[in-house]
Amino acid sequence: MKKYKTIIVAVIVIVAALAVAWFLGGTGDINPPEPQVAATPTEYELLEDDTEPEPISAATEELIEEEPIENEEIDEPVAESEEVLPEEPVANDPPAEETEIPPPVESGYVAVEDDFFTVTLEVRVDMLVANMHLLHSDKHELVPEDGVIFLRTAVTAYEGESVFNVLQREMRRNRIHMSSRFTPVLNSAYLEAIGNLYEQDAGALSGWVYSVNGWFPNFGSSRYLLNPGDEIEWHFTLDLGRDVGMDPDAGGQLDD
Image (cartoon, rainbow, N blue to C red; front, side):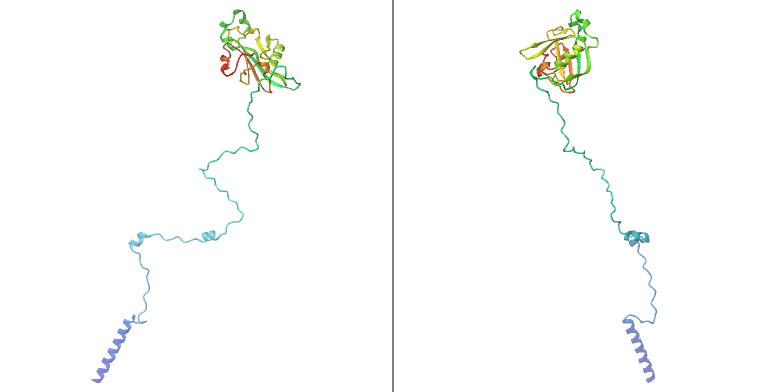
C-alpha cells in the first residue's frame, strides 16, 4: 500500500511539473521549433500595393555617386513664350535730320560764290496738253505732245544762287525762250513765259508756278536760295496752281 502511495505522489509531481512548464511558455527544448513561413498577403493587400520596387543597378549607383564636372558651362534654353524686344537705338546716334524750308531772301543781297553743287530741273505743261481748247490755235505748235519743255535733268547750281538763276541759265544754254521782269514792290523777279507760253494764254488764272522738293513756296523764285540736291519743277497752271498740286489758300501762289 505504501508502495502505491509513493508511485501516486511521483505521478502527481510529474504532472504538476509539466503543468507548470506548459503554463510558463511551453515545454522548452523538448520539441524543436517549426520553421517560419512568410505570410501570404491577402487579396486586399495585393490590391493596395501589387508592385515591388525595382532594385537599383550598379550603373545607376555610379551615376548617383558621380560628382558634377566643374567649370562646365550649360546654356539655358530660352523659353518659347519669351518675347524678343527690338534693340534700342544707340544713344550716340545722331537724330534724323528734318527737312527745313528756307526763308525767302532779299534779291541782290546774296553773293554768288564759286562753290557749286547739283540740283534737278524740270519744266512741264501737262495741263495745256489736256486742255488745248483753252489755248489760242496759233500757239498749239508750241505745246509738246508729252508736255515736257525741259526734261528732268541734273544741273549745276552755285552757292548763293536762287531757283530763278538756275532756270534762266539753263533756258539760255538750251536755247529755250524765257521772259521775265523785276517787280520792285516785291523785290523779286517775275516769270512771264517759257517757250513763248505766257501767263493768261489759257485763261485769267493761267500762268507759271514752281515747286522745290514738292513744296510750292509763297514767294518769288528769285528769293529762294538753293541747297544741294534740291528738286525744282516748273508747271504751267490753268487754275492758280490747284490743278498741279498747289494750295493757294496755304500760301502758294503764281511766281512773282
